[in-house]
Length: 294
Image (tube, rainbow, N blue to C red; front, side):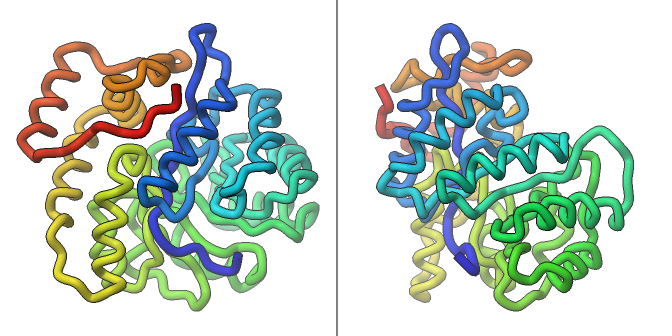
């Protein structure tokens, strides 16, 4: 895959009552997203609680996912601060023939662009076969990619650095690179991003907006008048008022209680917040009858 185009969901992870990863239901959810309109799905992004789920559970899912009919539609997130754990996990993924990854630079520590370049260089030195989508999310990571840093990484590693998920929104309007995927992290940036030459989106709320997002994308590609973009943006705006993971799981759990379990410190919305979100979504005539995993 040289370039990633279209609507990608940063998929949720489904847990059982003992807070273990439910491999079958998590994969079923990802399949449902594709059936509902997503071109592909990111497994173990931040929305998938990647920083909270154990390595052994991730490996079990990757093994089963490798046999899935939609295998080529998946991007695997790593979710590690540790360079060595990232390299080790990529080695496991290589054994199951995955090659596309969403990799966020380490969180917590303060560092500069040249340090970020070194981090990715060490990964690529060991795994030159991998295709990496950079993850620009200053709010969670603490580091913000500069345009110059991304350009330098692509210059050094044109075959390995294939795109960026821009959830900080400092790149998608100004970064211009050939054969490189620029994917904002919000539906509110979808249409504007496409008009500026972006490739699509990777978003958390595509877990519930897959059909709407695909409609806006297809209408742009086919040069059809937009009838759903404002509704899509408004829906995203309502979810942005809350923790996205909490809001998404709360809405999904209305029709399927498989989504009620979250790893601490995450939780569902309280009843007051849930009511407010539902009331606002109702005003937007937003349909949340989704395919079930149970």
